[in-house]
Amino acid sequence: MPHPDDPPPDDAARRRRGIDQVPSVLGCVCAAVAVLYAPVLFGLAGIVLGVLGHLRGEPLGRWAALAAGAGMGAGTVLTLVLESVR
Image (tube, rainbow, N blue to C red; front, side):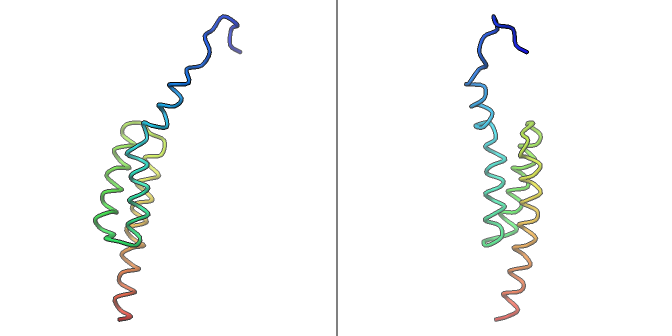
């Protein structure tokens, strides 16, 4: 329990935490784009950004890298299936 004389929690620090996850969020965006467009390019970019975020201590980094890998795999399979139909 906080002491009554303690200063209030730093709102700026809480806001910074959300802003500091930029590489991980971009990795998630790359994961989504990799499913529909250039899976290898955007998938690898998402993996790199996710790993970078994870190394920086971002909680979303590991999940962004995993999602980018899954997006790259799904995009590649989707591309192969659509190419075989033509």
